[in-house]
Length: 122
Image (tube, rainbow, N blue to C red; front, side, top):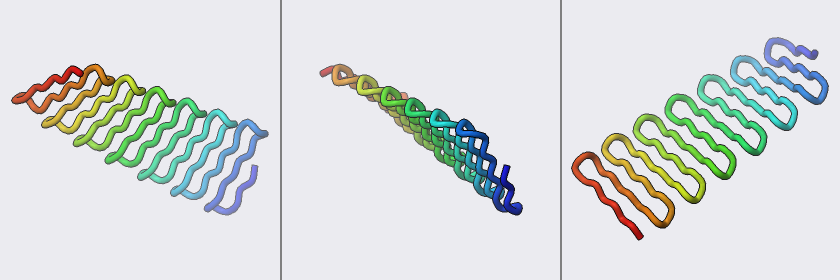
């Protein structure tokens, strides 16, 4: 264990666990190659879990989640919610006013509020 003033705290436990704590502003946790967690103040929280899972949390305004190549989910505040699921399914939710759902090249559905519903089948 290595402690350097209150600003820097480093804990190295073999190759399996490496923890770096830099004041209250930055907290980094590296656990082998499988898990990498980075906490930067309350504004930014980033979590990297191997190549299969990548999760990024940025304040309350932006939440982004990347899960392998098969699933990509993006949440942007309450106004915009975007979900990308592989090449087969793409779903976009924009507030309560607009909801767009794109399902592969075979089906395209656009729902705009309660007034308009459009379905396009290619």
